[in-house]
Image (cartoon, rainbow, N blue to C red):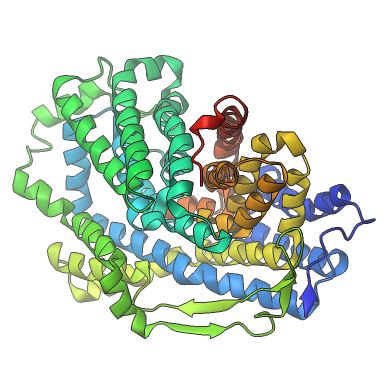
Length: 550
């Protein structure tokens, strides 16, 4: 049995947290400064983290290696499986010419790149987050924007920025229901707290996207679209999370925001059509259409071209139904992970008493979301009239192109698992918890760090939910405030998570340029988590009556 040690350096929490931070700082440096390729930086970071866990945090080498391999397999299945199949579906439509019709159908709504980003990255991405989560929104939406002609860096970066406010309720509310179960809390009360924090971000993010793309002047030109998109999403998110529960806020809010934005565009369009430098201007695009280079599309053509993605949505929703999950789950293989299950123990103050950690691995070959996307890919082959031989060639080409991104994903999830089971993540969490009355401000940063390490708000909530609850009770604060802050702050770490960066890079052809994506998203991630920290502090000390009471 290995019992986690939280103060291995001089018995000091501060020094121990700084030493635990070394692999994370190295990873940032390797990507953002040295501009190493993602899989190289991730491999070196894993090696450094294993040494840190063994030499400083006293984790036996065999268990450190076991934790890393467990994470790597989790990175491949189910996370990498989702990424692979989502990009595969896009490439089927691209290879058969159907995505060109999709591009033209979106352009017929508007040629303005900013509004296209709102429709696809923010609203459609939120729908995918609500139904599937785990990298699906970035993989699908980023590949769609790249196919529309967005610069690859902007296609990936914009989707990473947009995939923030929906994440806390992603995958039909799993992040919140998982935290409620692990921390023995009421999922509706956590949902209500998150639903009282995140709507402020939901209103802000569309404006933020417009500024990032086109500056303050460009944002002013499309403020009605940004306001319509964000406000409709935020209101729906608040109402559903507070009066129904955590399962449907993303799905319903995304649908409402898409409908409201399309209705607005029937009566209003920006005076200036904004496009990236080097692209054809709006006047040139119009002249091209007038010359007949792009004949007008019929409704049937548009519906046919969008059908693979409609099938994708149907399959994902179908896979999320409890009855379907129960049937498909019968083929799932679950086994205790060797040299780790019940052989690593957490202790106080992370848990009330020393508790061995259950570590299993689940291979849900049928129930996995990626499998539902693969079935959508099979159906898309018939919809798009693709031959089976060409479908197989597309599959093989996709596997070849994604081999390094998938390796990167596996390595960074392995790093996250090692960080968790070695106790390094708990040490950093305790250092933040030691801030006392400032803890409401710092509690979102716990979630932020957790999502950075694991790539998942669910994992972050499982990692720190119990600590948030215990710390809040010791400080005589509402545990639902801090647990909600953990989830709300965590979503802002999604855009800098190595896993998400790898997904965005693989979906847009930026493999090897992961460092560029880090530099694109890092400052926005920090600014937005500070915004969430301020909102949380206001609830704690200015409007405590607005906090749900258990």
